[in-house]
Image (cartoon, rainbow, N blue to C red; front, side):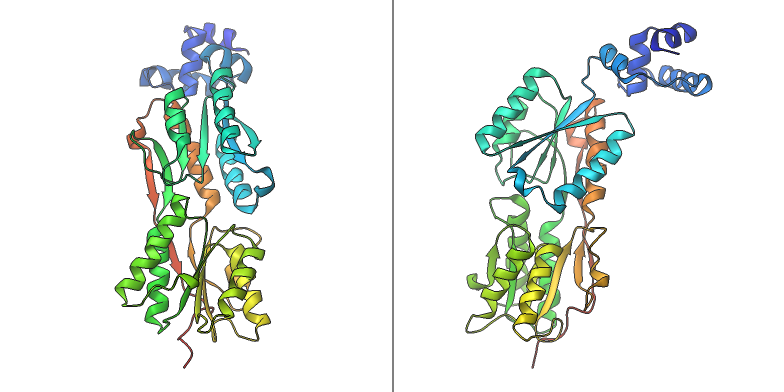
Length: 338
């Protein structure tokens, strides 16, 4: 049964049926219920192409990655969650990779002009992000994975990065650690700035001085964690504890600690942020790694749901979420040596 036949069968127009099944807010609740009940009773499943013609929608969500070579495990997990949610509604994902900020801005302009997507996902926002103002000017709906400063409100999902690192730092200070290192991302990004602020706030609350030599920045990779941890350990007064921004950089830090002849959890305590990778569990490492934890795949699923709600007319002010971060203590943290 096609759309025309189904609409005739239940005495409604094709446009009304398509809009009802797509969740358009202007469709009366009783009409939507009538259409969905009839579809279930008659076994009707919409043809995506016909539905897109009737609704005027592309049936796709766009996402632009800058630097395709940096598409790593975090991006893969996020995309897995996003795809899982959008597939339930028959929505495709259009992925573009670019090299520069200018290329990315041009990509958004093309997407808006071509109408190949109904909305886009913005990831890793900067503290002040030109992409947000551009998309608002273009009138292209979007949801941000993270937060940013902007003149107009926008839909976003973020985690409490400030609270996560503040909690981790306070825990280490309460264990007697006075030299605590931080492996962070690039502080041009909001999440890294928030983590840095949480680190500073916890040090100040425990009366500990901030040493810039104990903070490193870079991509969350094993190599970055290894290189930064090696540098920390060569300082005249090396750290007795380190906070790694991801499980990937934590692996590198652990390797550097062991090569130096030290023991994780005894000589150097370690806390990592865990995005919950299915192939890298902090419980299975030796020792188990103390973590701040928030699943990035679940964030991808939720953002997929949020972008669909946005397209159905929900106000951006009601689509702004900050998730708390769980703190799990394992064997990689202990009292400061001596």
